[in-house]
Amino acid sequence: MEIHLNGGEIPENYSRYIGKKITFIIAGIVLLFILLIISISVGAVGIPPLEVAQTLFGANLSTQWDTIIWNIRFPQAISAIIAGAALAVAGVAMQSILRNPLGSPYTLGISNAAAFGAAFSVIVLGTGTMHSTGADAVVIDNPYITTIIAFIFAMIATGVILLLSKIRGASPEIMVLAGVAIGSLFTAGTMFLQYFADDTQLAAVVFWSFGDVARAHGTELILMGVATVICSIYFVMNMWNYNAIDAGDETAKGLGVNVERVRLVGMIVASFLSAIVISFLGVIGFVGLVCPHMARRIVGDDHRFLIPATIVFGGVLLLASDTAARLILAPHVLPVAILTAFLGAPVFIYLLLKGYKR
Image (cartoon, rainbow, N blue to C red):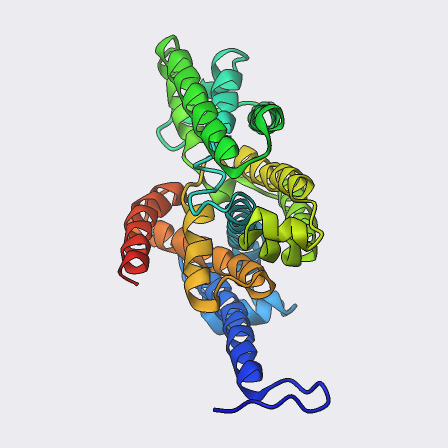
């Protein structure tokens, strides 16, 4: 088919090509809202979806339902959306910056560092205790200290990775290898601490390491939300730089992109966002690794669409996973990190095989 450019008009084929990508993103937002209603409506106390929607839009239908929706289920659902979007956009940024499909907060050791920080807080600083009842056998006495220590160690890991890359040059290979080494080091440190821990401390460490979106309320949700919005805006503002880097460092430099600065600042922003989420919710693996690949297969590699699509898909994936985790063993609630690990690994292998066959 012959395409003509008339007075700067956009070719029909290109408009259709762009329209499909925008349609997918809009459909993802609609799906996310539908999942939000479903997630809030299901549980030990079932609430009709229509009445959930009316309550969210301001109707006061039932005091009991208002309490369940606003105090329990809505914060948990919003936490899942924010955390999924944050981990997903951090993952797509790391993969683009490093030009490595394995880049993510989980594979670069940031999650391991946060887990070590939590273990250090519980075992050395004594922030975890054992209650006498089975319903709340393990409790983190001072979650804020545990969160702060986890965040500090996550940023220490980021700083070491960036320092090594600065010494040896900010190449993708150096950053990835440094992340693998740092992750292994912090994993060994966590095992060392667990070896000397008593039963109570060990149970508290394991409890924290199970990522759970139900932990965040009020201030934590606001902090995660603000950080996700600000960091996502930064990534969107640099989408053309990431497109240029995808073509190769030399090509990007030829187009005027300061590759080293974009790479370093991008890694700091992505790591900061990941550390915020992990320190509040615990380790949630594979979301930052799988979501960018799933979005990429639908909207392609153009970061104008890949970044928004990954943000939406991250929220959809983690919200759907959290809803399933609450229902799969009802009335028991399964931590969402267990489900994402079970689903993430085979899905990622499937995507690799499909990509290889292509």
